[in-house]
Image (cartoon, rainbow, N blue to C red; front, side, top):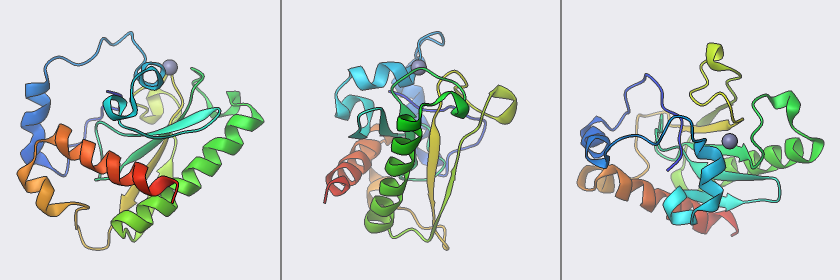
Length: 168
Ligand SMILES: [Zn+2]
């Protein structure tokens, strides 16, 4: 599964056990954002596939519903993206906002790209745009499920809800 590791603690600290139980992290030399599109949507936590870019859940979410928009091509910097990729990353980002607003009733978003390791990119070899939903109150997307399920199951439930709403 793909995602962007970082130094921040998850908001769902009760589920940190799920990471420990999941075993070793993928090999560092394998690019998770190149590998993900070759897997099923369910296994890779993909919510939508476009022509030049796709959307998946971050395996290391800052918040429930944290999406990543990635070009299929392994490019590192935003200015390496073609006009078609720029347009589709933008369109997928807009659609991601609409879907998250609808399914999670979030009040705002943090959207952006970290360019290079020095700027905080967890995976600096493959461009990815973060879409992080924010709530006024520190409410969770799925508070009841979150208390009763392990993280991989929770992420699977979030993926299904977002993917189902994507083409509505
Ligand atoms: Zn890659």
